[in-house]
Image (cartoon, rainbow, N blue to C red; front, side):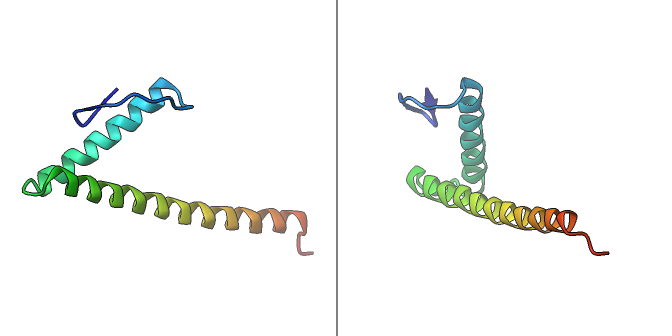
Length: 83
């Protein structure tokens, strides 16, 4: 597998389609960053990419927690309706 010009070989417990989508996301986001800051080294761009992806993950994790809390409240209301 080639990611950003680097040939990688490893085993992962995901479908080939998922791996393709993952590589496409990395390459797309890297290209966006490179377009905004072409003067930076590849290493710095990769660090910014990692930080951006980590921030996306943390935001999604927070949203998931909020949705789980809302779902729990709704299930509690259904289980114990006020009369």
